[in-house]
Picture (tube, rainbow, N blue to C red):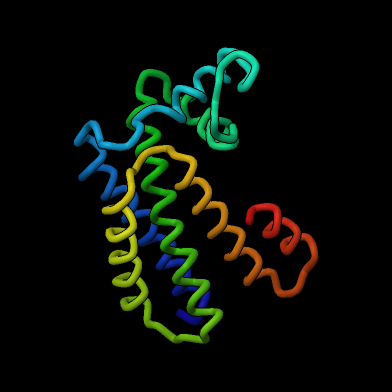
Amino acid sequence: MSSSSDRKILFGWTMLAAFVCHFLFSHLGFNIGDDGFVVAMSERILKGQFPHRDFISVRPIGSAILWAPVVAFSGKYAHIAVRFFSWIQFSLIAFFWISINNRQWKIELSTFQSTIIHTVTLFLGSSIFTYYGWNTLDGLFFTSLGAYIYLHSNEKMIPQLLAFLLI
């Protein structure tokens, strides 16, 4: 995956994989995780309540703020919209780490090899974790994004600062 066109193809595959997984698995309903915990916090924030003052939360509010726009724009379909964007997060995490490993270890993978590794990584990651808005998934996403930005920053100060803020 050495060229920009290979990276674009893999990114396109990343988005396609997220769409396919969403349409295959998101309708399956309840999962054993705390379905709706972060979404409920997002709804409360959208209604004007403040965490730790109007309601008790043992977790940081970053995930609730992150998911608030999805909840606001999806209305009564928030449950399925949150699952869709969770699949995008899972797929992007796989994309980021393939790119990080290729760059860090100077591995030359073909586009086909990268898409196969991405697919396997996506399925393994999502099979052991809930595909719903959750603090841990958000943390993994922002850590992966920060590492990706840092390694692709080419020693520039602003992208490196952004990467450190995300990590």
